[in-house]
Image (cartoon, rainbow, N blue to C red; front, side, top):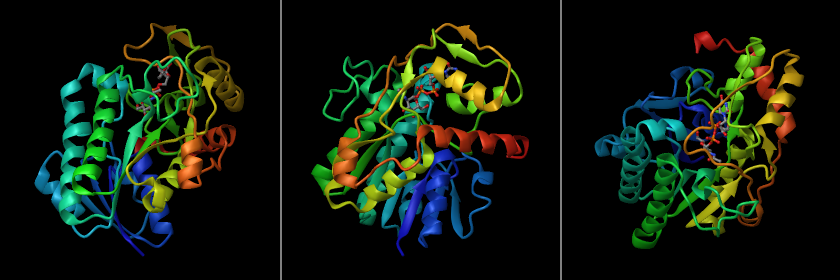
Length: 314
Ligand code: UD1
């Protein structure tokens, strides 16, 4: 049994990590500001220590990290358009809080810190799939902040010997992803619209593509990254390795739900990336990772969850 800190543990991905760690018998502390996370995401998980606060405050970061061997740093304001609209608060959550968590982890002698990095780091690179050796090209404040986070991790490994791993997530989806904000992940937004027979909005022509990754695959990749010997100091894509256009995603979801609606098209979002698809060779080699849940299976599970979830009570 080890002691884990999950920052952002009341959020979508953080709560899935917390659930799996508890299931495996580990001790888990969650630190969350509840800006985008919700206590209700954890209510079904027993024995989780919960600390509410802001990691951009160094003293809170120190309290959060104290006594933990592993830090899964998931806390963030995870939205491209929100960062375009308000780069300062997004920077505070995505950069200041990350630096504090690194400093606190270094000083507390943490064994390894695993960071939620992002596929947005790649921007519009001409080749697909995107592999970790490609130069980064951030197209939004969010993407830049996530790249800064990765670089801080690597610097802390070199300068202070703190073991770190940056896992680049590719459009993660699944149960508990909050559909209610204008910045919510597209699958959560489409799911709730289709289940209510409302037409969803597609930004741009809908031919942009994404490597949508079911959350259980991400949990598996991150937990492997805590222990894999060769992972320290690395940046690693964790994804499914395929890609689908927004138009095809809409059609597939419409068919599964059985809704009779057409999407409304609006102007493309500023900072939006055209195509995204991961090369997952490094994750396979360093982590022994293979996606265990396919996109189709994940999509069906996710729709089932939105069908039965009482979102108003969340
Ligand atoms: C980006 C990152 C992802 C990161 C996420 C955080 C890329 C390739 N991916 O996701 O790694 O974790 O930010 O939020 O940069 N869309 C619609 N209708 C909607 C909502 C969205 O058409 O109602 C479109 C968007 O314009 C975009 C796609 O769907 O083209 C996906 O959007 P979203 O789910 O917000 O994620 P990304 O911005 O791609």
